[in-house]
Length: 250
Image 1 (cartoon, rainbow, N blue to C red):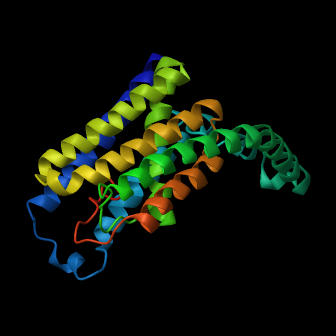
Image 2: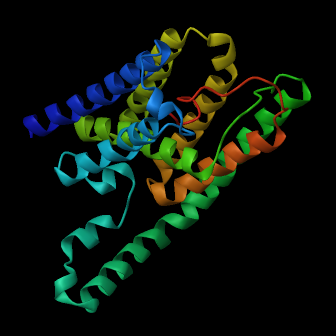
Image 3: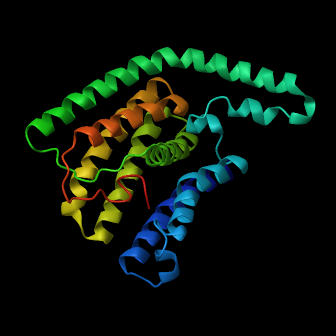
């Protein structure tokens, strides 16, 4: 158990160091001109995939974390079933997953609606007061999927370490914000990063609150996407560009 907790903590450190390292390499413009001809550079696509999806996957397949800790409810049923057994086993896994989802869906809809309503009220009030100019806010489904999975990854690490979901939410969000701050320090571009930072911090806190009442990442991602889409649709168009990390890209 102690080894498992140690590996979980190590994964968190690796993730933060990886993010900082990639940002430093980009900021110092180290040569990789062959990759820069692609849009976005292929090397950055690979780095993003490893950072946002690869690390959580490695944590699951090595047994350091479970799918349930990340909010991926139902995946463990498929892990226990084997395709060689036959269709019946897979159907049973689907039924068990659907049953859990049915339990979560009502709570998620209520908590998600409340969280989105609060976010919409705050954001629209900022827009009316001309304080909502974030310019090129990019919130594609892939961006929000990456962010949701990354935030869930940090929550899962602390949930594993503390065995307390409430504490995991606080510590996970704190680590995400610390990571953003460190990256902003390297980028030395806080004037452009400030608005996206605040918006993403709000989404982080509100989606974390929804996760507390219904820890199901399958349902949480559409709520995250709805909040990000609201910002994208109502924010004014300016030359300000959302920082890669605060918009779920490294």
